[in-house]
Image 1: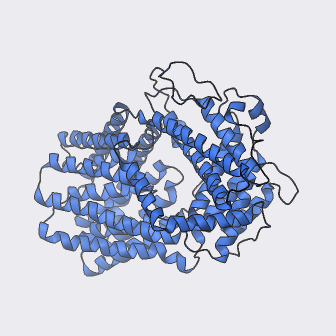
Image 2: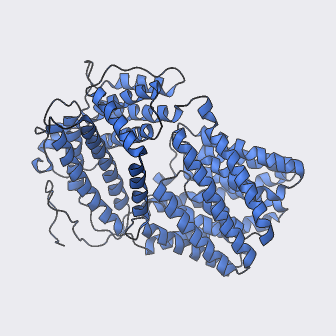
Image 3: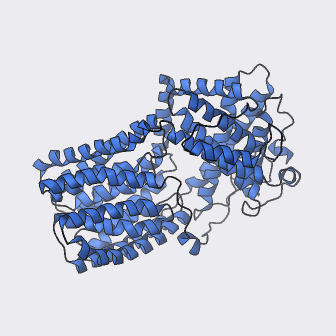
Length: 596
């Protein structure tokens, strides 16, 4: 591989240059900064409270609060799937319940067969790594693999008898079935709620892009390197592309078309037209930010979905969506989706280094705590498992957030413990309160949510009997510090050089998708379905390209990224989208990467 720097606008330069390894700076203040809460924070918060309250109060009534750990495993499944349309949500949450029961079964059987701490830690670390890979490959999150690891690791270090395992698993599956009903219950009131929120986000992102599209003309004239942070235009276009792509994916997965979904599809066409060719204007086809925001507000609300005027190519776009939906639901489409999932889990998967980090970090954290005399070091395993994000920089952010949140949460636990010991009902109410608070706060910042998660996790131990407060607090502090230190150490030692290869593949895929979109747009005989699929493929490739670039940029020991080529590919891709969106003819006038 050549050491010659890659010049911008050279599609033939397929390989990244090998440059010296680098350790990038790690942020401090930005990792702890609070953000705006999610627009749907209350949905998982309320769902988990309802899904937990019924099993908790039932066990309280029969005097078996010691079994709450098993029903809680099923109740926590109510945290998943809130961004998915209900047709897909039903399948996804059912898979979460089965996956939760499977991990719990492995833990319970292991705990019943051996009391060796070394074996239990090894099994816990292996389960954490498998759960991490499966959740990342299927993109089932948030909260991702952390809940699975919390349940399976805690069960490993609890006394267990083999003959009681079927009954305990039945409690988990029963609570999980109730959680499934809770998560799907809003469909009875607002069947297209998830689709409406996804489309509203796309309209809002397109409005931001239309309002501040960035110096597009300067981009074509000046191909020199430019930071994304210095020029908000590419950042806004990429955010709008991601939101529009997510909206199309949500609509494609929503099931059969309805009048409301038809209106939503037309709104996404307007959002797409706004971000691919931004620029405010008074005309009927212009990208008017205020009109887009007004549509977004009405779409997000409870009233009727706005009916927009026809956008360029709307009829062809909807025809293409119907055809693509039919392909995805056909047997061959389902087989292709399964093959894509298996490729993501294969030996060449970019998820493999993160899985190795999880395995080593969790094992190291567990063994360190065991060596220091902690009898049940599952919290150290959970702490280490929770750190691993897409790259080292994000893992460092999570390390700071988890450590700070857990230490503050221990203080909260010490303050609330006397209240929880007033009565069993008080203990149940405290757990439900902290479950709600955790989901209400975690979208502001992970450390803030951890302040509520920590006392809830410690209070769960009280259902099996009171423990000395000093012992609980001391063990938890030790587990947190050692788990965070061991987990981040593993992240720095296990390199992820596949991140650079993912950028190479994403660049190649974007070049191919752009060429296909230009070819089909220039061909008057191309079917509308083919044109629409080519444009959506290009949008998806741009989203993947930016995600791959951001992931690689946060990794250590990486070759320098071809920032110029990344920006050139993104600009050319967005110009191709702009040229093909109106369907007024060939796209030959859209500059290519080489024209930059």
